[in-house]
Image (cartoon, rainbow, N blue to C red):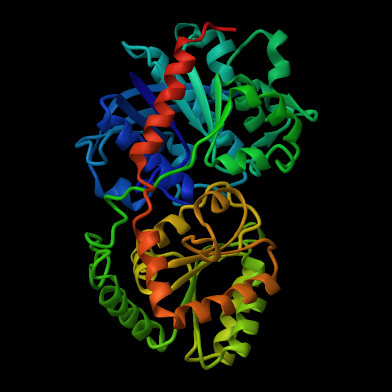
Length: 475
């Protein structure tokens, strides 16, 4: 079948979070399974765009209210990512370095969706499936069904995949005129709590709804930033599919970003050499267990708990542990984490920002990864950690609940129930004792490294959903 994935992010073209990793990997495995897969993202001013060759395959002009924007569709020439990558170039709106964070984000992503559909509707072939990702593409299922200009593709089946339901793309009805013309009898599909909610639109109008883990599908029925009742009403067309990881990129035996490669049979010396390199870089002691955090420093990820939890854990175990933080986000959290270096020099360090190569080295060189998330729809960090032989310490929520089982239950990690400083420190204390019990510690590492989180399994589940909705008669 012919499948389009439309998204705001796709690794390595543009990445802010896990959305990019999923959209960068799932299409590749669907392509390998024999389908024609195309990915469409905005043309940001990123390193990948500058370093690769693209050809213009379409150009046109979109109208956004009273504004006219010329756009181009650029195709990456070599299909080096394992699928066809297309960029929607709207220079007035997307020739900027960042993916999000601009005052005109609503205009940017509405124009992106309209331009993408204009191109798709004008192609010689009509796709079987359009898989939308998060609220940035949530209006697409509505437009396909009801906008007059997309009559040719109105029967195309749509899926919306929810990577994080907290972000919903709200905007007022004063911007309704941005949308291509449609019969106003259908305007109710756009409304949620007296505004237009892009995510709600997609959930209402798509033929199927997927979340990135089974547990997250359950959680959004009672915690979804105001969309709880909507999720309950669409449960019959919803399914939770646990994300995978791209084992061709994330594998300790082949990862070129590591100082030393290793396998399940050589993880002990291999991890130690990466740990020594990492500790040398950050002035830490490689003889001590290393606890790391990789991610965005926001409350959602438990980032606000890290300064106090780190200080308390280091105070209690100053001679026994190291802590390393890699992340960025809330300025106050960044400042607090940076200040801790003064008090715990030699046992603690922080890198404010993000560095892909450093992240890979941290997964390989750390003993434990901290994930005290309040919300974690799926989470990929724990899967990367398991594959690299690093034991995840997680709060039981969302995909963390689905992928990490406490070692006390013959599992592969350390789990706690509350997003609290106390629970984090208690888990760190358990980890220190586990680290000293090398026989059991190594068993848990081996168990994690052999867990199958590859995309082949995930790919099959998505294809089953696509086939199901293609076979269903239009309601």
